[in-house]
Image (cartoon, rainbow, N blue to C red; front, side, top):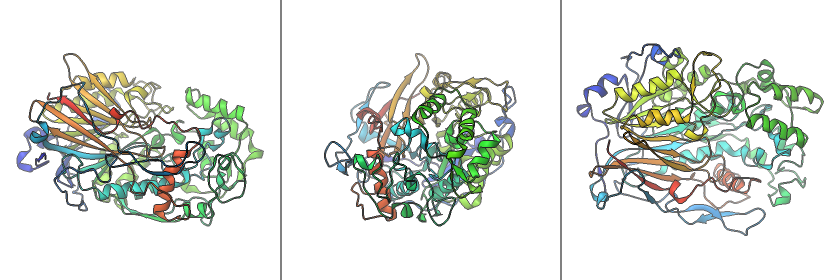
Length: 590
């Protein structure tokens, strides 16, 4: 069994840590220190000075996590069991308990030495959520009609995203610490695409899922659902109706009362751990791909009309324009909606569906109503709001630093990049904290940062892609990992630069597309010149088996997973290889 070191004691702080820390937040096992660069440091002026802000942030009151057993365990993780099909090989398949995913040791960056399990000391542990995609399925701007050109453009499980996310929170609250070391979990961090349509309804749901509260995943008419799933259109699964739709022809069930249950109020207990937030393209841009500024689309989002069907050829054209980055302003979508004015169906207008701006995203996180177990702002500060930035650093433990990046591109499109000011801030932060190990978080992966479109607010600033971020991180031997999402797929990549540092890029699958995962990451010192990062995947607390007669909150969360497994056109490779799932990733000490 590994030994457990103190993750943060005031006496153990070095001078650099103390000077860098500007505020304290209570973590589940010690004190974490949030690094707050001032507004000048966050400014988009690439040549601006960057001074430290010594203002003290409030102390966040944390609810107690379950006592850790200080021993390894597998229960409640994919080391014990993973949802898998139990019936047939064709048509609609029912899920049940499947074989566990074993742990794989990866030594591309350093050799694993014998006896390390008896020597190791725990340094830090946390949980990563990514790509929750909480979806207001009745939103007028949703692009369900793209399904006429591609089966996977609309997913039958989308109405159940909130129930599924709440069940994931319940899973984390049930964990008895970190699976390998048994040490207390320090925090949860989301790595973006917390919302789907960049809608205020979804942002409110997300914050309540994470910090606790009652949520009614409904918009428009408060009495009943208005959307594609009771439209009678055969393109979509009509769960309550008798229409022989395309999905029922594939074996999808008739579930009377499904839609009423899907929009029924539910309750999230909120995380029992502090949590931090990272922004994704769906949080920053309408529909995850269009820049802000089109007044027609903004008004359409809150209005009383919705396009529910489209000829396949037009669907293919619009989808191609989005994929190939041909329509960052949404001009083609606007023209299409205008051209189909007579085909629009009436829905109840709702101003809460309005797109939120980056400033509104920050203000919502800073709202005391959503503090939960803290920290205040969940990583974001008033300095971010003043400077108009969404990146920050925070103290995970005495000698472990967390850095959350904003890789979204305000110019439009779903791929990412960072501006020069942020890249310089990243390198400066790593240099100023060279005595600490560093773990970097972002939404986009190195491979999906190819969008160098200029930020309309800072047209003279250069944008930098994934290879430049990798190069920057490789210069710093204290960087251990880059943890991200976006691709909805498990993938772990070793990065090594001769003569420089090496680190692991850990990309985790989403919680909207099967297999519906989150990841626990543990950092340990092997006391032999190496470190190990243990990654352990978890599913929500909902049972693998479903009961079509159970439309309770838990029953819907289980159904959410099963529907996603059966979604037409779904990718079957998102779980990755065994080396991308439950792993031990070995590193040399820098």
